Image (cartoon, rainbow, N blue to C red; front, side):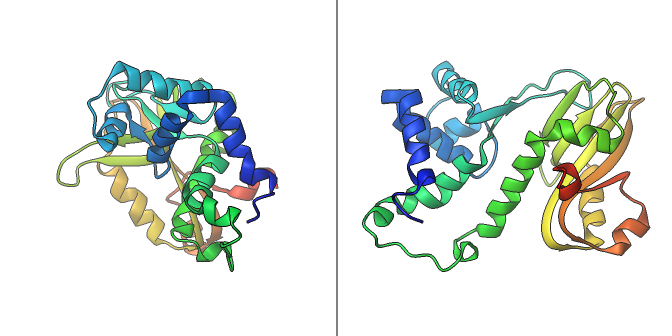
Length: 248
């Protein structure tokens, strides 16, 4: 990591030019989103302030500038628009910068920072998991034909979270909905992915609310070595390796 590197200065230059005097405040909002999507209320809680229209507007400005995006979609239980809008970082480099560059920026500029390998950085595997999920979400249009939905009328597509008490909540990396079908898409990056992924997803789906007349299907988008047993069990309706999604 070198101070004269293009990417080292890129974020600071662009962010300052876009937001000017408001850059510091906007960066704080991005830092809160760096570890995962949040609602306006969730961001307000992390800031220790009350939810306000001003805060919502600031998040919308980050959305307009392309740093974040919103996940809203339809409630699978009612078919109506979800009540909560969640904001998440859209740009992978922004998350990387906030996690790993900004905290050591001063040391890098003074030539005091050294790094043996990226894997030695704290939380590296979790970071790659988030980045892979973001990559899949940013390319979900390319995902649709691999799920047999190339010509389907998509009503909603985005991450899904339902709050619940005592383990009754439910979270899905990506939920794609048509009029008569809901696809629960699990996004997983691991060195090896064993049959335990089936138990993991089926556990989520036991808590998944779905309206009558809608068929639930499952897909796994993965990066890593997939165990033959996962294929043989036939649990997933679609198994999509990252290379196929990205055309590699």
